[in-house]
Amino acid sequence: MRGQAQVLVNTPEIELWPGGLLRARSNRDARALSRARRVLRRKRDGRYLAADLPEGLQALVPHLQREAGIGDALGALERSHARARPGLDVVPVLPLHRLQARLDALGLDADAYAERTGLPLVAEPAWLAFAGFDRFRRPLWLHVDAARAWRNLRDAALRDGVVLDAISGYRSHDYQLGIFERKLARGQDMAQILAVNAAPGYSEHHSGRALDIGTPGEPPAEESFEATPAFEWLAHHAAGHGFVMSYPRDNAHGIVYEPWHWCHSR
Ligand SMILES: [Zn+2]
Image (cartoon, rainbow, N blue to C red; front, top):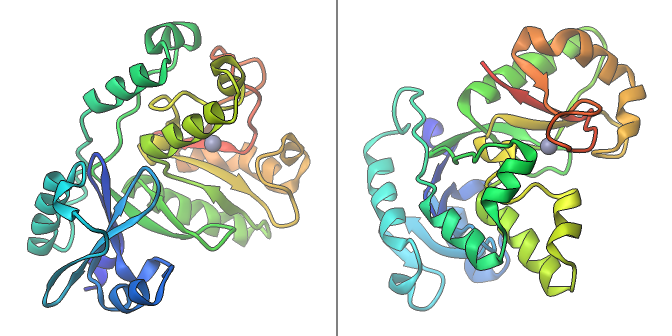
């Protein structure tokens, strides 16, 4: 089913991927992935948990039933069987209570952070649209509105002889939490990490509406992007497609200048 293949179904701890878009990490995975309608993937570390095969669910880990969030994921899987798309472009968001508990566990004072930066908590969408592949040939997931706008933006640029590529789109809370856990484990302190990473829950990338944009030959996410014809083109045309540069120089959030980071806001 083509419509189903183009949607990432999101639940608090587990993502439901179309099988065809994931790389196998073992022969057993390869056999299951090639036939799976959906693959359940743990958000925190990317581990494949189960394959939804025509004959039923095949566990890819021991004790699947004890996996955190498995109830929500199986419920979402059931609903995804019933519909090719989870609703007519209606995109509900996931609850935030679990994130707040995990920020506490990390020792991050979320209230103080929100106060200092003026950034709001950003909920994850309950599903994301496939928006092609990024520069690194990874599937790019975006909010369905942003996915459509990105395709139009890229095509319009191309007509003017400018090549835009995507560096990064949707990222989950768990992905961002994982970055913090790894850096803390390596001995960095919270202030050091927060100087370069948005706190988990506060990145526009969680919404699926933010996109880091690059152009071939240019390193990803570097300030030098502002000197490229691609940036010049974006500065004139992105707003017409609903994209706004979130972090200009000297922005009120105290975030470094990010000429590559654009957010779809319409
Ligand atoms: Zn970004």
